[in-house]
Image (cartoon, rainbow, N blue to C red; front, top):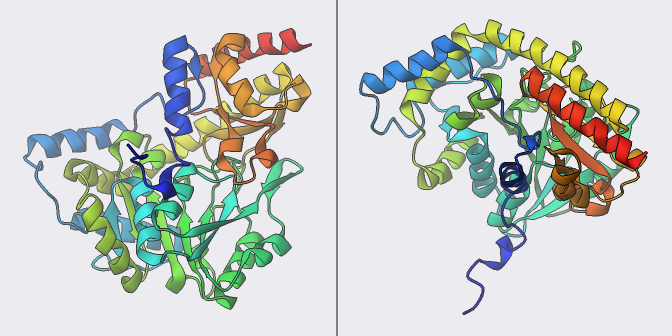
Length: 391
């Protein structure tokens, strides 16, 4: 029998997150690979979901999402960023940000269109582009000091006659970079000069550290009308399993995305929408405390990784610390990631899987710090033994 999977998807097997989490389970290792918290979100928000289930909100909500959540998203965008979106036509609720990203690419890109991505990129970007029959054009983020950034000339060179869109992720997974206003202004200029759509993944919008500001791309002059702004409840409120996200964009772009989304999942779970609407209005104080807690966890893990011998880059946002394995005498992150349970009883993610040009990321490993302090401390103690073995 011929290979059943269509050719455009054959490079995508099991995601690296599922693979590494499975490895952690099989070996009893500490999982610092997949980015999910090991504590729940605000109790009152959780109770809103329970009340909604018990109150009978268990059938299909409206396809665009419950009006209550669309209104709360619109209020949030205006309050925090000064962006005005009509909840009835410019806000769409999705099954997490992942569906929002996929539906946006499928709706807005024709086969053969080119999509610029910053590598390393979250792996669903490449899969969504492949599903659309489009072509990705990577622009590499490289370390400069403690953060990763891109070469403006490389970004401009990536644009060609078939370029349709650029996917922007800030705060950025997996590097932890938060794009500066100057970097975003350059992206905006490229979009306007070449009439590109920006698909902006902002799921870590509230999780930035050290006073670093998250600047939505849509707030820059001339960008609201060409930006698909995507976020979700999962990272903001520590409920990644709820898969409740949203798109904010001009009505014509939202309509296009909804045309695809309705045939992917039709609608998203109602109880989670009610709870997310409540949280956007009432629980951002809880999120501020979460941000402070995550900054401390970041510092805790960074100190341990440095002591173990890794080269460490300081993230300005997200859940993740990027490390260089070469000071420990290793050169292949994928090989080390698969050996790490045996060597240290810890699981991490090899960053090279998020590159088109894998050699550029071969020496990086990504560790997640969205875990309890005692878990981070135990992982650090185990990783210290790795440094001793390679000393």
